Length: 447
Ligand SMILES: Nc1nc2c(ncn2[C@@H]2O[C@H](COP(=O)(O)OP(=O)(O)OP(=O)(O)O)[C@@H](O)[C@H]2O)c(=O)[nH]1
Ligand SMILES: [Mg+2]
Picture 1: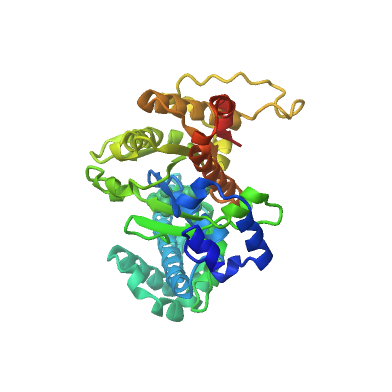
Picture 2: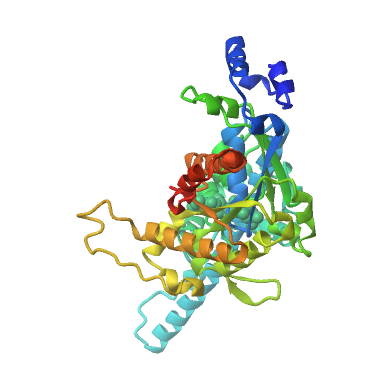
């Protein structure tokens, strides 16, 4: 093994990728392409606007390709992050409860008042009128006040791990309380509560105990797990499967690096980007479902998030450091996009105002082969980006559809990236006629 590694100038792989002696010999006896000999580490730079899914893809790659995705230490830190997140979600819920209680009781008062002026009151003038479905008992109320105070002071992380030891029983009581359940039912009205909160809140009791151990799925869904300083990197090789052919066996010897860069890290004049001149390929991530979302840009003016992504894409692909580099565009969150397309027209985003799909009315029943609205939308967006890229660089953009929460989807996108990089390295060896076969437009899509 060591011999092969020296030969290929590769780092010695970990025990997990052991080859038998015959395998090594057979690999050595075959001819090894030049491009394999020359390179050591192939680097992908993964970037995208905030919320596009880069950290999910990064975590997914770790789970897919690392025999031990997270060390004990990492898991311990992640556990505290998740617990602190869940306390945060509970806090948002409690804040909502306060608001709903106030609203409901003031409405009730109004109603009572109008009933009284009607002079048809038959009631007993009950003093219970201030109590609503959102009212909690004094014990939970003081816990709630404490939690909200801690959140406001920004000290949520500092209370761990003591909080889980002390408050686990209260959390359970709180979560089972009917007022909290009534609030949870109205969670779509709580703007501060992220979508993923439900996944964790429904298991709050199980998570907020001292001996909770996060599963890989918990880690995948958790916010704030990937390094907060803007840069994270992962060394990996694509695991070998029994079905692999010769090329893929060689591939499992190659080391790749996935570098995830947060946009926050490059805000100032993109000066960081010069550090990445030895990158093999840029993987740019866009959330497809952003087409109807608005967020505030640096100047504080509301901007469509897809337009923000487009602007950031332009900045990256025209940056001098990346001039000759291949770019793979990941159109992520296809699952959310597909659902949303049925409700919200794609034309909501000004860039997509000429999207007028011709759809058969029998689409869902008679002809299952015709593409869904979501698929049509995906292709339309892909072409928009391809044209934009071609107009900026004169080059061809590679596009792949992704659902970052699904391991297989991330696996095939990264393997697609590998294929593109491999092809680009081998291209000089092909004759022109062969080249033309590979450069057809259709080949640049990955399902
Ligand atoms: N349904 C669905 N949710 C996704 C998908 N990809 C990411 N998400 C969720 O979208 C949210 C944002 O994803 P992240 O991976 O944190 O995005 P990011 O690019 O790291 O953004 P920052 O953390 O803000 O830098 C998370 O809650 C993810 O779980 C997807 O394909 N489908
Ligand atoms: Mg993130």
